[in-house]
Image 1 (cartoon, rainbow, N blue to C red):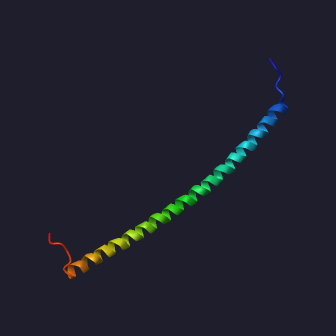
Image 2 (cartoon, helix red, strand yellow):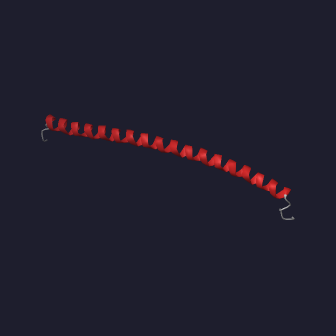
Image 3 (tube, one colour):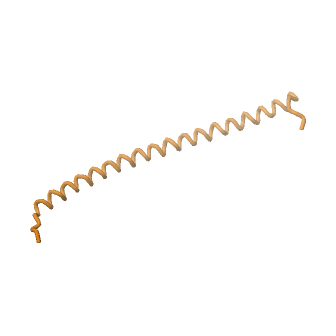
Length: 75
């Protein structure tokens, strides 16, 4: 059986440890970016909901105006 060099194993383990640390840092950055994206999308959904509510109010107002001016189609 071949001899195992502890120094070689130590060097390999140090490189693996550095790689794992780099991966952890990258994952941390990705989590931050994902959170920012989620927050941005939430803001867009809230904005879209507000716009839809305003459009619904405008639609109701337009219906009332049309009825008042007798501009509606006879159904």
